Image 1 (cartoon, rainbow, N blue to C red):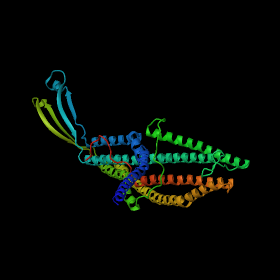
Image 2: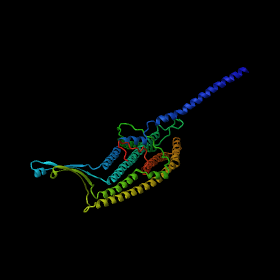
Image 3: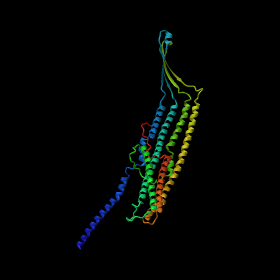
Image 4: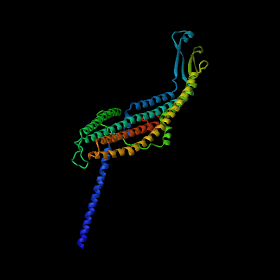
Length: 445
């Protein structure tokens, strides 16, 4: 009895160790696909990474940055007072009064124009100009992101189409007699009539032509994208695969973000600048008053020096700068109208794009579940039936074309969804990158 119990305990221990070993092996095997998938996804170029790379070298962003610098230069000019002027008068008064010869300095003066109230409005206008340039920088970033997104998603589409064309060619090659065997490994090959062979040859040739076309389109798009990235044409690109678009953000959030759209804020700063221009035009009715300090030699008073002060003011009798004031006021109306136009267009584009994107997401999902998956299932059954001699060649070709055409249409729906999402981000003013402006310019207060 003791021996049996000992044997039982020993077997139980061995079985326990075997179970733990098998469990550990199962866990390791289960981890292998996830690890390989993680390694496979490493190095894939995403849209955000593409935008980040292109924004660093894009001349559009450099031009927008230079525009900010130019407005800072105007800001410095707006704060500066007019330079003073120095005058020296030398004449022959001494020669005429007391006799002698030559010229003597008779008067020395310093004049300083006083800008009075116009400087405050010039500073306001210059500050609005800097703010407008910064908003234009943000808007240029949105435009660049939109441009990159269009090309990125197009390249994703071309790459997916090329893979699909190669799969279609591989399947067409499988139809040929050398590769058509029973799915269970039966060495028997289905007999094909000459007419069936001709039909399959046409399917194969069409698949080859489709691969050639897809390769050409992919290479052309990849060349344009590499040029935008600033990389050599020989460098290979591994893009993130084309996937379904997730649900867009709520419309209320998008409308709220629209109010802070860089294009609208730039237009608002243009209104502020135009309003300040009206006040500047009013102050320019007369020139700046000029204060003059002078010292004069009075030869009639035994050569004594006299000091004096003089204030010069224009009298606006003939010209009151009314034309410039009128022009400045209409500039305000024009800036307000441009803001209203942009607000209307962006609002309309936002609503239309939001509805269209929702429709595309829903259509793609319905297409996948109600058309693509059934077509794939029918295609699989048709291949088996054809290999078994139960179905004719026309049924096989029809199932082949239906399935691969459905795949192509599904890829098109996915691309249209991503392109519409890019339009929606642009309309709502949502940037994928940080909107911080990296410049060396000082802050405007």
